[in-house]
Image (cartoon, rainbow, N blue to C red; front, side):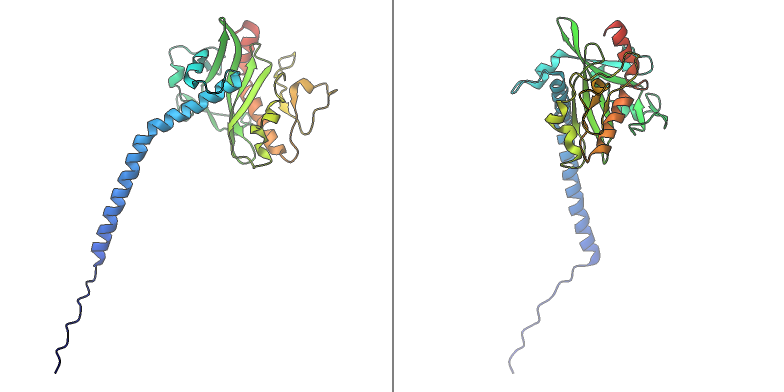
Amino acid sequence: MPEVPPKPVVRRESVPRTLLVAFFVSLVCSSLVASAAVVLKPRQAANALLDVRRNILEVAGLMEPGADVNELFAMVEPRLVDFETGTYVEGVDPDRFDPIRAAKDSERGMAIPPELDVARIGRRAKHGLVYLVRKDGEVTRIILPVSGYGLWSTLHGFVALESDGNTVADIVFYEHAETAGIGDFVSQDAWRARWPGKRVYDEEGQLRLQVFKGRVAADDPLADYRVDGVSGATLTGNGVTNLIRYWLGDHGYGPFLHKVQGEGS
C-alpha cells in the first residue's frame, strides 16, 4: 500500500499577533509623519513669511522680477498700531507679532461686537500691523492688512494707501476660496486696476469707499468712492465692501488713518 504524504501544516495567525503587527506599523508611520512635520515646519513658516512679504511689496509697488524679496523688504517699515487710540505701540517687535494668535488671547485680543462685525471676523487683536514705505525719509505708501468673509470664504489681502491716508494706491487679495470664474475676480489684475485713485473718506471724514453693484457711471457724484462690481458676484463684492468698512472704519485702522490725515505718519 503506497505511503500517504503528510498534509501541509497551515499556520494560522492569531488575532493578537495581527493587531500587534498593525500597531507597530502604525507607530512607525506616525513617527515618520511627525518627524517630517517637525523638519518641514521651519521651512513652511519661512515660505509663508516670504509669500506675505512678496504681496506687501507688490501692493507697495516695490516688487521687481527676479529680485530678492527679503532684500527689497528692507525698504518697508513694519509698525504696530493701537486700534483704539490710533497711535504706534512701542516696546513690541512687529516682526514677532502674530495677529491671529493675539486675537485668540484673552488679554491681547477681543470679541468684535456683533453690530460692528460687518466683515464677520469674530475676534481681532487689540493691535494691528501697518507697513510704511519711505523715500528720503518721507512716507510714500501705507499698507494695511485686511480680511473678511465673502460668499464662501474669508478673504485675506492688503490695501495700500497714498501718504495722505485717504487715496487708494493698490489692493491685493492673496488668499480666498471664492467661486472660480465668478467670485475670484477679486484676485484678477483687471479688477484690481480699478482701485487706484479711489478715495476712502469724504470731506466730512465719513467712510464712503465701496464695491458698487454694476458699473460706476462717469457722472456719478460718488464715483470717486465707488469701484465697479462684477455681475453675478454681488455677495463677494459686498464682502469686500464690508471688510473695507470694518478695517478702515472706527473699530479698525480709522483712528490711525485720521491721525495720518491730520498729523502725518
